[in-house]
Image (tube, rainbow, N blue to C red; front, side, top):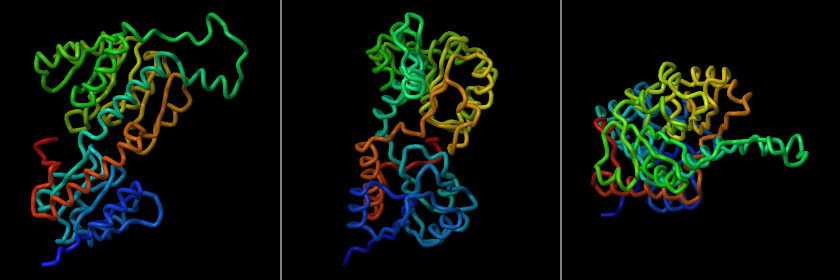
Length: 328
């Protein structure tokens, strides 16, 4: 019996090598341009696709899933985070959801360290001075930053990325602390040289650097709210390479403008689309366009995970990276 090729709709252009491999295995449909699909295009996609391959820019919510045709049986997300997908509704409709975990761990931890260094050593300010004002010569008091070694780093979320960050921070001589939904095993803590804080409030109040590395779930929405942010030391900085919704961005913006927090490095934002315009005006803020996973190697590995999940599903088995509501 000949192998039937699944109809796979990809909502955004992927690395060429990934698309080529997909085309060998499946009947893939992609847009001619590398841009997000409109809502109308997403509706058309779920009405025809047997497998949908979305990304974090696509809102796969209840109303969209209600318009899906009976042939849609798998949403193979291109990315680890699935907060843009209504996993519970998909499950109720008999649609499996998979993601691409583990692939972005090292790349995202690298970006967290990069933001910490950029803030503490005021690298963007130095770069801007060289590019716009010119350099007038060395001065003992110019652009004095803070020494990284010895700083207290508080990691919010000690999963794979948080642990990878802890190892990097140890190499820079930082003191690692963490808050997590579950405490790590004693031997893991020893390996990471990390101190656990059951109270997030107490950890936040004592750290020089806070790094957000937890996923966005209903329980982590605005986990760093205005009250908790005000516990931070005025000389402390905060970085976020996870999800913007974990931080009350408006409260953080007000505190940065008032000098109540020394700086922020953000690779993600509350609406996932763009940063608060007021953040662009401040020299003590580093803004990046969600570059945490943006390496050639990482993006190709993400695509390979998507292919494995679809191929496994096509062979009649459970995708290895299936996501169920209880995991969120």
